[in-house]
Image (cartoon, rainbow, N blue to C red; front, top):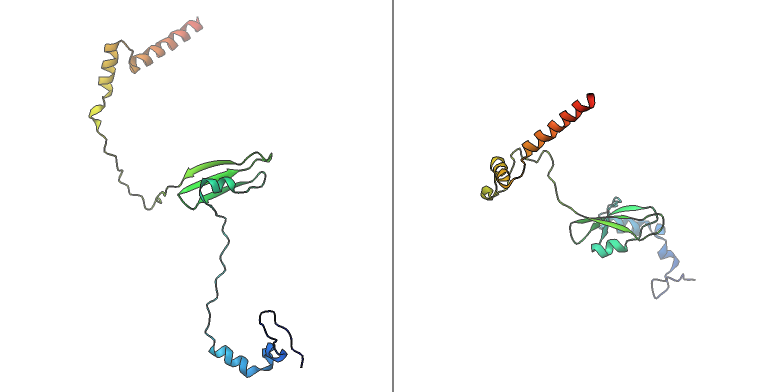
Length: 158
């Protein structure tokens, strides 16, 4: 009897053992006793490219004329890499990712930061200090500009 060689085993395998259809009872027994293994789900392809830090973004290959968003796997950064058609080194812009709540999650209450307003002056007090120092206030400046415009337009009509 001639045996076929099996590259995965150190000994030869008889040809009948390689053909389970010749042993239907053995095949049925193997199917009934074998536990059902869960089939792995095929992952859907994503267009997210992960890089490791700024050095990984700089080292990422781009074809000429291509632009790509690269996400940092170490920090919340996004790199926009663009390669010009002239093979000039890749231009990279770095952005920090900040989560923004959806409109439905936003509250209508506006939260103002606590600012100490005791060091600030009001408009009236500011204008008063400007007059004391000899400067023209904003209202006086606008009034003077309007007068000059009106006088200039009257002279042009004559």
